[in-house]
Each structure stands twice: as C-alpha cells, then as structure tokens.
Length: 160
Image (cartoon, helix red, strand yellow):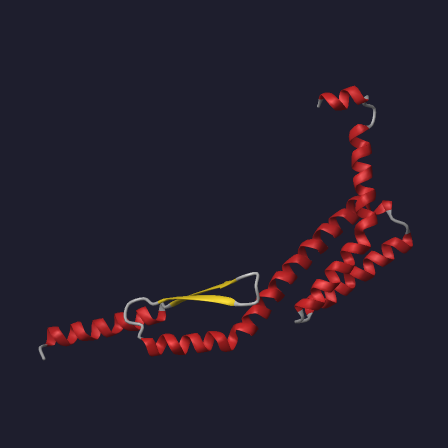
C-alpha cells in the first residue's frame, strides 16, 4: 500500500471515529408514559455502536429524567424564593408577625428541600409556600389596585 493510500485510510478512520462521537440521540417525551426515540447516525456509526448507545440510553433514562426534574424544580424554587423575598422587602408591612413567621418557615422548608436531591420534595415545598403566600399576594394586589385608583373617578379610569 502506498504512503498516500495509508494516510488516506488513517484519515477516513479518524473521520469515522469523530462521526461516531457525533452520533446524536433525540429523545422526545410525550405526555403519555411512553417515550419515542429517533436515532440519527452520522457517517459510519455502525449498527453495533447504535445498538450499544441505545441500550446505554435506556439504562440511564430514569436517572436522566430525575436529574432533569430536579434541575427544573430547583429553578422553580429559586424563582419563587427570589420573588417572595423581593415582595417581602417591598410590602412586608402587610403581614403581622404570625403570618410572616409562617412564610419564613415555609421558605426555610423549601430551601432545605432545594438542598436535597428529591424533586418531588421540592415540588411539594413549592406548593406549600405558594399556598401560604396567597393571602399576602392578594393584599399586595389590593394595595396596588387601590394605589392606581386613588384620587380618580370612574370616568377617568374608564378613559384609560
């Protein structure tokens, strides 16, 4: 074999190896409990490699789903905690001491759940904090509406 052909063969092997590394899986979850998987091979992946990768993806699908759910719940928790802290800084005077204590307790519970690895516990803590903060949110809305309407007649409000 000539040197040029040998170099070309090595180059093709490298490209095939890179193509195999670039093999992509697109996993789409449906609302139904089953999962559809579409496999896109990229240049010379080979059916054995595809089969191995599929088996590995199925073996780790539950872990991947749980990791994604954990990340999503942590983001939701951070968003809720940030918004509630800002609201308390702006309008905390709308709460009496016992109401504030309830919110502080539920916020601490959510922070503890966030530090763990159970997405269901985080979701539950988010729901509890949402329920606990509903009266505060209603009072804030009432204050905002009252402020917007203060000193205006109904005709003035209707024209806007």
